[in-house]
Structures are given as C-alpha cells and as structure tokens.
Length: 128
Image 1 (cartoon, rainbow, N blue to C red):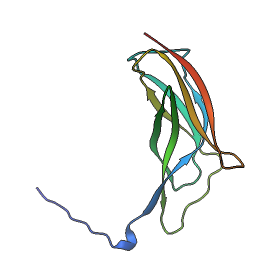
Image 2 (cartoon, rainbow, N blue to C red):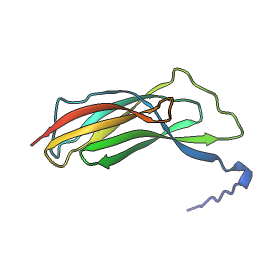
Image 3 (cartoon, one colour):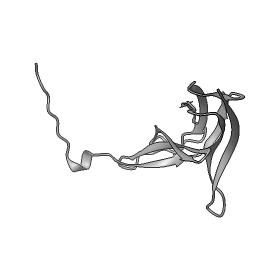
C-alpha cells in the first residue's frame, strides 16, 4: 500500500468564512407535522457568488419556535469570486418534531434598513 503525502505552503491555503444567506422561499410544508415522523422541507435561496457554497443549516430552538438560517462557506482565493445574480439553489431540511403542540418555523430572510433580522414565519401544528 502506498501513501502519498502532499504539503501546501501558507499561500495555498484558502481563506474562508461562514455567512448566512437569506431564504427566498420554502416549499413542501405539510398542513401539520406528526410526532417522530420526519418531513423534508425544500428551502430556496440565491447563491451570491461563485465563492459561496452551501454548508448546512443553523437551527436554533427558541421555546416553540425554530429560527432557521442557511449557512454558506465563502472561500476567498486570490480575489477570483464572481457575483451571481440568478443562481437559485434548493436545499432539503429534514424536520422531525418530538412532541405534540405547534411549532413556529422562522426562516431568516436578511436584515431590514435598521439592521433588524427579518423572517418568513410559518406556524404548523404537531399531531400524535
């Protein structure tokens, strides 16, 4: 068995950071969720540049609400990022409630003029 070892200089290491991007729309939301049954929501967003790549979701529990944001990993290599205007992407989010009641899904849609977070809010009952 052969092992290949490669090394990179510090100049070759990509510089990256994580960034939230606004949710444009959400589809496939059921009329109600069922306890312990996963549902897949389709989350649509615009990819801002060629350096943005989908990295997952941040889901923050806040009582009966879930604050949900799309996380992108932005790689800045030697300034070759190109802005994108119409690169629509969809990512699946699996939601599996653990108890009955209701849940408020709050999808991050960016900030307003005053810098306040804006959300697309959907209330969904959870049945047994």
